[in-house]
Amino acid sequence: DLGAISTTVPKSMANSLRDTRDISYAGCAAQVFLLPFFMSAEFSLLTIMSYDRYVAICRPLHYETLLGSRVCLHLAAAAWTCGFLNALLHTVNTFSLPLYQGNAVHQFFCEVPQILKLSCSTSYLRELWLLVASGCLFSVCFMFIVVSYVQIFRAVLRIPSQQGRHKAFATCLPHLAVVSLFLSTAFFAYLKPSSISSPSLDLVVSVLYSVL
Image (tube, rainbow, N blue to C red; front, side):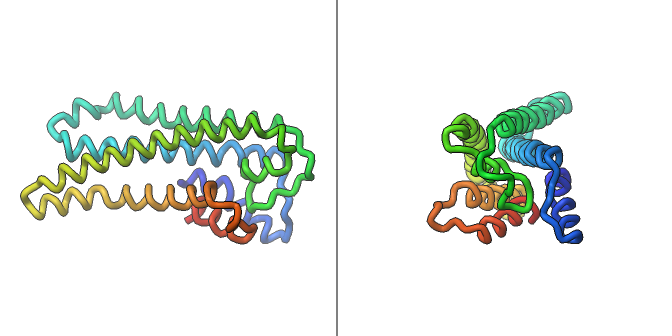
């Protein structure tokens, strides 16, 4: 979260103080790489955390076996590697496209979909396929989180003690709140109908998912 915010907000604040909208080519490339990197890694870590909650509640006696320090290290490394590869592919592909419609990005930071709008329609089809592939990966993670929580809720409802159920739910609520906020704003930003899209609405939604 700190990395994602540091990628976009300081530059935006500096531009506001200097009353400018400029960003260097290298700075734009850094934002295009770092934001997907941190957000992909975050979503991967949130997916792993849902598995952690599942094991802790549904299979507590096997917790140390299933989630020992070595396993946690491997899972964390996989999350960061996934984020790195996803960001690298998007950055290389995006900046290899020719831009025919100027260099003004209608956003307070450099974002892949906004840069694609500056390219011709035939050029960004390959990037579109990459976005679809990323969407499929995110969908798999989302389904994993949903299945984990279905199993968790079934296990919690079988706990006879009300205090035990309350404790189990309290363990899951912070994670659920973060996942819900993260996914709802990101889905609305990228999957909302074009009929309700507008520059001001896009800006508000971007602030929600990248800052709040």
